[in-house]
Each structure stands twice: as structure tokens, then as C-alpha cells.
Amino acid sequence: MTPSELSHCPGTSAPVDAVSEPSPPPANDIPAKLQNGVDKTGTPASIKLPQLLETAKEKGATDAVILAPHQVIVDETLAEKCLSPRCENYGLSRSCPPHVTGPKDFMAMLKNCEAALFFKIDLLKDLLFSSDRRECFRLLHQVASGIESKAIRWGFKGASAYAGGSCRNIFCYDEASCRVIDEKSPCRHPHTARPSMSGFGVHVAKLMETAGWHDDGPSPSPEGMSHVCGLVLLAQ
Ligand code: SF4
Image 1: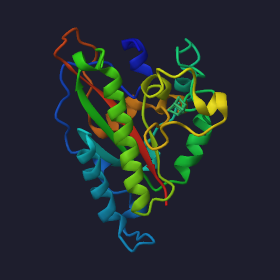
Image 2: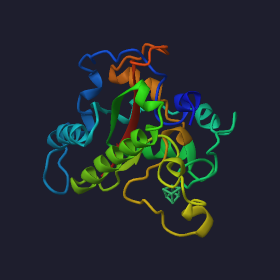
Image 3: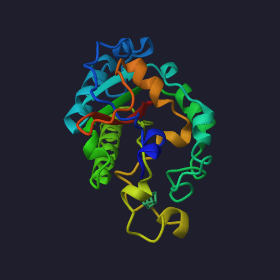
Image 4: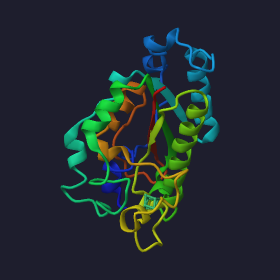
């Protein structure tokens, strides 16, 4: 995976020298729809959402925010970038186009969810673009799936997590093929591997902006920081 591929696919922005301390984002306001909501367990959403933010950090996120669904911007042209210029992982796993349902389906899911949790993991650029990058993305998928799992336990039965990068490249790189596509069998990593936001056209740069996380652009400094990002849709 090259740096230019990373800038599109794995929920990353371009490397930056330093990730500014986030100012308190308006995004962390509990969406109005949930402020007085109580789920089937009787737990007010206004309590569960802050706890999910804590869960994100416990699992390895550097920071996380709650967004209202309308704050998650989907741009179909971003999904088209998986095909042109064609990503080397295009079509190789169940989690990448054309095997994912794409932007239109994602927008429909947004209409049915109560909120979204967006998180980032700050990483040394040196590490993210090193031979250890696979471990960085493994962590990203672990955090995303871990939040999803906790959300489901807390009443968001329709929670779904999205990460970045190709799960084929991250989890099944030494396998001959994706088992789901080629063998019509269950995924080898169903509890961890999650689809990439890219295939659904999620506008990660806009999410970063909404979250109040600044990206100062590419830097030649190997000591600089970069990040990987994930998203969990919270639907009851
Ligand atoms: S089997 Fe491997 S490549 Fe296929 S969806 Fe699961 S993790 Fe991804």
C-alpha cells in the first residue's frame, strides 16, 4: 500500500507534521433526536453515547466524536476513485467495491441511524508508512469492530462499523483469495474485518473538519504524525 493509496483508501488523510489539539467540537453534542431517548434497556442515549466515546479511547482511539447523521457527508465520486485509477485491491475482498453496496445504500443507512461515532488513531508517519503499517490497520479494524460490538450490546442493534484499507491486504494477505468471494463461505475474520469507508464514498476529510481535527497537509518530516480513521453508524 503506497502513501498515495493511503490518502484515498484507508480512512487516512495525508501525513501531517502534527495533529493539532482538537478544540471542543460541536460534533460531540448529543444529536437532538437522542437527547431524551431511552432504549429498550432503559438506558438514556445521553448516557450511552459518552460511554461509547470512552470505549473508543479504551480500545485505542486517540479521539472520538459523536456526529448527527446529516454531518456524515457521502460523495459518490470518492467511491469511484476505487476504480479509477484502479486500486490494486479493487474487487479482491467482500469489503471493497464492487462487492459492497456503495454510496446510495450508505445514504439510506444514514437516514435510519440515530447518530454516528467517528474516531481517529494518531500514528507516527514513520510507522504508518513502514513495514508495520499492516499492524496499524489491524488496530484500526479492531477499534472499529470493538466499538460496534459494544454499541450492539448497549441497544444499538443495527450498529455497523467502517474502517479503511483492504481487509484482504490486512488480514488475508497470505491467503490465495477472499473466502467470501471465491468460496462463498464465511469470512475468516468476521469479528474484526470491516469494510472500508472509501467504497461507500464517505468524505473522511469533511468528517475530520467537522470533528475539529486539523490536517496541515503533507510534510516531508518522518517524525510527523498521521492518522487512520473509522466510523460506526449507531442504529437501534
Ligand atoms: S475472508 Fe479475508 S479478504 Fe475476505 S472479507 Fe474476510 S477478511 Fe476480508
